[in-house]
Length: 207
Image 1 (tube, helix red, strand yellow):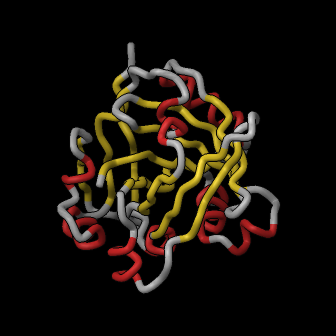
Image 2: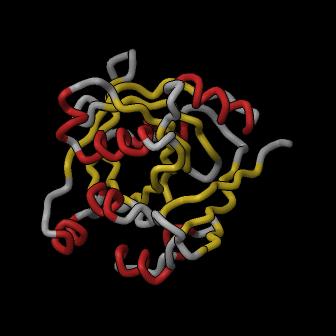
């Protein structure tokens, strides 16, 4: 169980403009991720150090986005102005979470221009929609060299999160102490005044 990535729903001016602002602030380049056909979304990727990454994601005008919880979550966050949507934890085995949540993980995929395919399974988006402080979970499948953090070498490090919520609630959700997947990413917990969830992410850059 380890911290894998953070998701940022694009703002009202769209995926490219939102990504350019974040890239400029971090002083790094973003790369096109691609379309998630099962979810009705697409993303841009900013690789980070320590096998982590940041994705900026946009909902598409596609029937899949109306049915898939991930598409619904992106649409709702973008409609509210965009911003941090959630964080994701990678695990080797999703079956304990499937049993605890009483539903099956769903497959995800996106193709690279050269035909290679990134494949994974994920669960927990419905939990994220109901309580945005909790992470969703995924298991990467296929070629590990295709992990989005490996698009290019990056020295930008995710150093901390500020989350409106409680460590106890997230620990209960994960079934493990919340500190386990976070490792070297610090968390400042604050009482939610309104909707819980990620309030900010701090990065260490060359500047």
